[in-house]
Length: 231
Image (cartoon, rainbow, N blue to C red; front, side):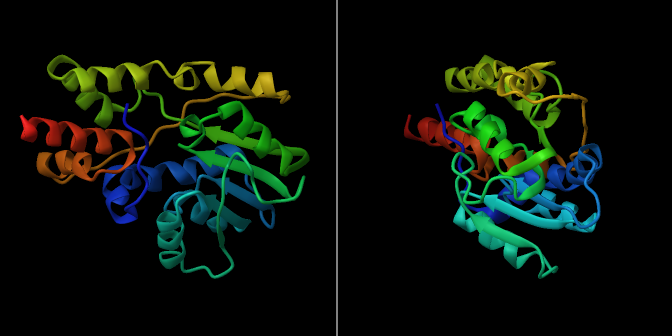
């Protein structure tokens, strides 16, 4: 099965960034980010959520395992007060309780151990603070991608395996995140759907986003393309 690839931030912008930039402000509002709070963005990627946190006049810190993505986020963020760190979501390099809120957008379900990751988000958040997570609804809410998976599942066994993996992720099912939050021990858990628009100039623009080699679907399309070329 293809791994999540995070090596080319410019390509990722075309792949998922066009939706993330619209999702981030809605997520910040959902999470209740307030002025002057210290807020962590775990799995910040190219920085859309981190910048949205800063736009809410909070003190924003983003962290990601990908050095190239963090470098890109630093270059494209005008606000010099925003901090971007390189680090592992499963072993965050921060003291206990140093943030009022910890947020994570489209990242928790990519971790090798989501439960451990969520416990780390909790550890670095002060008692009484807020941890908020958004993940993809792969079963019916990630339309630009599910269209490709549904077609690929019919035409290619690799595509079928990818689709099966994505739609079987329990965190993306209704109640999936809330259940994990309960397991970790959170109180006052609220789960609500959030949406964002992906805009494409043409079918060519849409299809090219899957040829970037980023993420799982992008990487999978390159593997399939190479396999058929070899045949």
